[in-house]
Image 1 (spheres, helix red, strand yellow):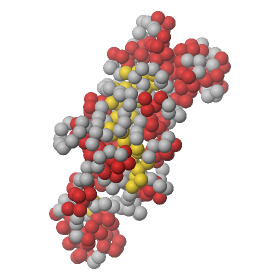
Image 2 (cartoon, rainbow, N blue to C red; image 1 turned 135 degrees about the vertical axis):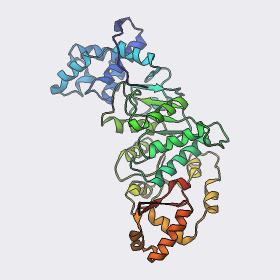
Image 3 (tube, rainbow, N blue to C red; image 1 turned 90 degrees about the vertical axis):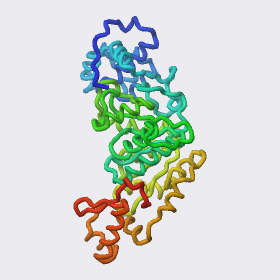
Image 4 (tube, one colour; image 1 turned 180 degrees about the vertical axis):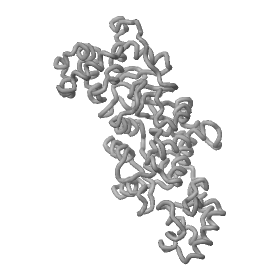
Length: 401
């Protein structure tokens, strides 16, 4: 979907049905710079979005408590000017002509999971069908700067959960998020066969307008998720994601899920925010362990130390959901077991790419011995040699744990 611009609707807001007026004014409030999701919700649940909007464009912010409590006096003039440049009816018409559904909190079509959330979005934009109940659903999240092994694990987990009928929820970011949804698409596109039940369509929750794919590299993935599942956003069409919208988006990911799996993460970042949001909502948090010295595993290891459930394969997640286990993951790992000395070398490489000299210094053995084991691992498709830097080859399916 290309970025869209509204045209004047030629329709007076007062001529719209009441439900459309509320939706149009919520949409317009959401598009005003300086007004956040909390304020929009307060307007919706308080005086109503239409009343708040009319108060805003006339400049009488002090007459609306929901606006007055959050807008500082020194920015009010800017907010009013921004609001006056927006045509609510035209914005609503743009969504409808683009095939984007506008979902209002408390109205028909709004996701059931979010109705009683402590911080529900007042308005959501959807591309694709939105079921009122999305169970079972699992969020798979993690760092944008993921390792090859982490991306491969996320893609495989996304595929195997989809095959088990579970909907994969994620934010379509680079790294772990995108890999998880690619795994889901692998199943739904038929490039990966073997689902014993109806595959679960993916749920993407993004921080930008649905017509502004972010990151741009994932434009195709956005289209595929919308075509085979649903894309959700509380950001109006035409808007790039402001920094505050990413953590706000993460609360929706947590609220839409039965469990949250963190595959790789540093000690801080968006995926750790999602884990916190899940814990606040009583949603189970699971994590994939990593090497103690790997920065990309510092967050997941900390979550495990704090009581998160351990994830070794898809069956650990299915067990948390109370769903039938596949029994395939661990059997495959046992059958693919490597010689202990090769496995130890892979364990060292979990920390990230290393040179031959660094592997020797890390206690892998003498130079000839390490070189011999690396050659065997490379021949077996377990390790890649990138200009003298060795790293785990995620394409092998992840024989290293």
